[in-house]
Image (cartoon, rainbow, N blue to C red; front, side):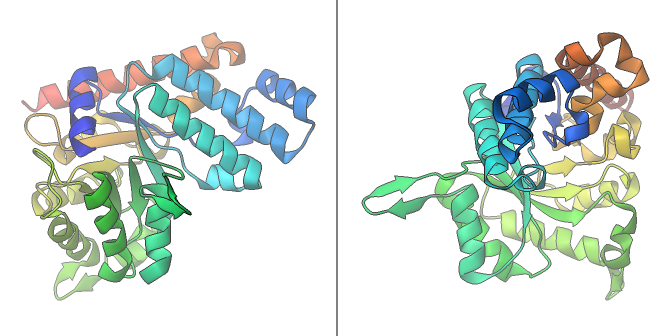
Length: 309
């Protein structure tokens, strides 16, 4: 799957992943109204609104981007109907030939970790039949429990040729409370980066490992160090746009050929119609606003990469 992701980035010239993280206040009133007329102000109504919102964004952007990243918590909060909307979103994105990164941030051990891996990127057996339950292409994993928590996911990646993005240095302000602590003279995030490189060494695609890393756009200097520590790991970079990251901040996350990283933007794209820059589209044309935001983001990153060549 890492080979497909790299190929799609090369084809689109857009190292961008759209974060499908739908909050109800992002969803235009006309979408909510129609869903509530059909299902009432219920969990089912909320799930239908989310699904219709996601579908229009995907329809408006899919040929411009290589990947999407649905954050499962935004769906889980609406219970079983929300998870059904998550599944419909994953399936629909696959129909559009998008790579799906399930932002699930799981982190446990043993059979629990194995069950998470099976449910999201692997298979489960029911009687004589085998199913791919959620069937994302990549998932995010929290490495706090060490190799015991990561290995079950790595094993499934080898079997299914899917991938991971492991949290190394996250974009939130308080990440340094733990991640920046010095251990034997090195910050913890560097030690985690070294482990990511080790875990990925025997899970190689053509150029990059199946095992990637999450490194926030808000810490470009740390990204520069981690790029060297993890030369074969693709880096998923959150924090663009709404969290302050810009194209010029991102150049050190990439390799010299413009590969090696994929940059996430969530509300900066899916709620673009709420921004002054895209207000002319209005809520009725929120998908067009999202498309314009993707085009602007791709241009910003490309200009930054070209400037350092």
